[in-house]
Structures are given as structure tokens and as C-alpha cells.
Image (cartoon, rainbow, N blue to C red):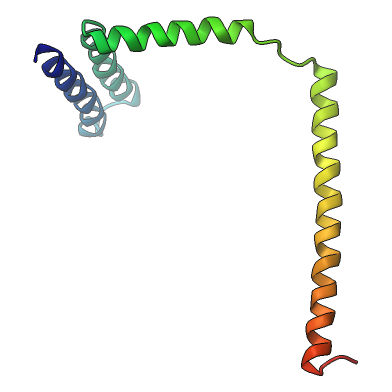
Length: 115
């Protein structure tokens, strides 16, 4: 039961941060952002004390570790892949345009409006 109460408190703290951002509309933007961040940080601290929160933080840590293991493409590979995608898009656009013109011609012939 205490887990659920802490989760609700965490959600209320996030809501308080968002509400603080909008209620402080006449204040400087920095103050509004700090109010929002304070709500988020305190909510995360409360969330960390729950088993659900600890699982979420562990998942986030593992995700960061896995992201570091990814072999990212080189600049040359990225440019080649992007060029291939653009080339395919252009080819498909021309093909679909030709199909559209063909259908338009066929419909005009069927409707008796062809020249």
C-alpha cells in the first residue's frame, strides 16, 4: 500500500511542478522552469524509494549500457545510405506519377472525354 501512495505522491509532485510553471506566469522564465524541474526532481527522488521506481532506474541504466555497445555507422556509411534512400524516393515518385498519368488517361478514355 505504501508503494501505491508513494507513486501517487510522485505523480502529484509532477503535477505540482507543471502547475507551478503555469501559475508563475508573471515570473521570469528561469523561475518557472526551476519550479517545473524542482517538481520533477522531487518526484524522481520519491519514485526511487519504490520498487517500481528502482526497477525503472535499473532499466534506464541498462539501456544506457546497451546504447554504448551499439556500433554506429561512419559518416561515409550514413551519407551513402541517405543517398540511396533519396534515390529510391525519387524513383518511386516518378513511377507513381507515371501510374497516375496512366490512370488519368484510362479514366478519360472510359468517360469518353479523351482527345
